[in-house]
Length: 95
Image 1 (cartoon, one colour):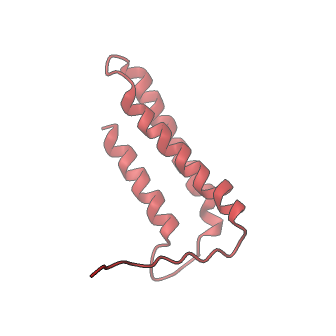
Image 2 (cartoon, helix red, strand yellow):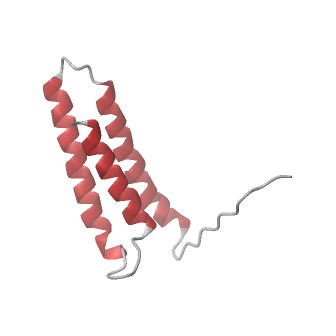
């Protein structure tokens, strides 16, 4: 007996739009976030500067995609949830 699940993704625009404008910035910001973990603790200033830069990048990215998010609704869109989780993880890593 095997169990499984099916995921369907409905894109209203061309796939290149989502890859270039959504997924690439998220992956780049996550990469910067992980790079902050690899900086030695002795270089505390560099670690703080990188952490603040990641927070600024996340804030700018959220403001850039805000017009594409629904104005109102019952539930938070998946992209909004992902951005929220990314911001929370960044803040918890650098505290």
